[in-house]
Image (cartoon, rainbow over all chains, first blue to last red; front, side, top):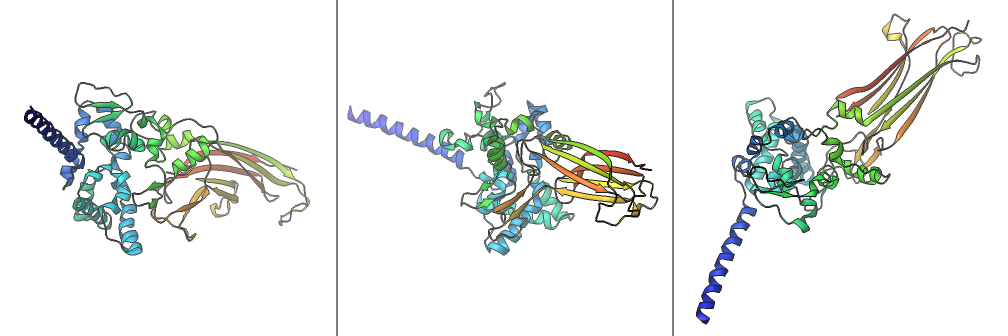
Length: 304
Length: 104
């Protein structure tokens, strides 16, 4: 009887160990090439069912989050790391940019992450050359894609509660399964301002370094919310879907600002001005212009 | 974000002499490092001097302008521009008004 019990126990233990190792492998799988990385988080599959949403995203700045920021990231590597810090380019260092600009790079190997960093330098430094354009074309495949938000970053503001994202799982506000193309989990986090604040605010890297690309969340939290504001980022920046319009979109900027102008003309009393005028005894043509500039957004302007 | 207020003598043919008044108000942020030096790099900026327009805030700006006694027609133009970066700005709102003076 003892032998049978021991046999069952060892069988169960082995099965548990194998499953555990497999899931651990899935979570820690690291890509060695951009092809492999893109395949791991293949947004191309999303378009099959979510055509309109994908088309909106394609026109968003999230879709070009790496190639639209090459200069800043190049400067971080060439000036920040090389000259100021005298520190080699590593995955941990480049993740200070790419954790937000291309979250999938979290799953790149050290070697690939460094390669991507070097490609950023080439794409910016050799802009307009065959080599520079080739690097930029390759980097254009990295961005803030569907699974960047709907998987990698989805539960990150409450990681202790949610744990690491499950590979292949799509986290969204409804958790609807659709036609079974993927597993879905409802996650309210993705509808909250704190979700966007992960990147649209002062960023704190794993080693404690603060990176300040923008501080939208600072003024959102400390001024807008403090004054009683209750709208979320998504209320304004996602009301037309996944294009996420902001400062680059003039209609959005106009919507967020108000201008009222009042121009009044009058005759200033003769002989009362210090400045020299042609005829001292004549009424002086004058005007008062009152301008009221209103910030109707949930954050300071300009910013972002 | 920049507010430009300009008054022009539209009777003046010489474009170089048309401007009677101009003033500007700028809202922006100054990024600085821990030594208090102005910086542009996101990794260098640790604090800011916040000169931006805060949420839920309306700022009133007043401009008083006195022209010369022979000025009869003035065009006042107010432009509010938004700069997505230091180089690229777009006019968001623009208002113009013609003022006529005849005190004789």
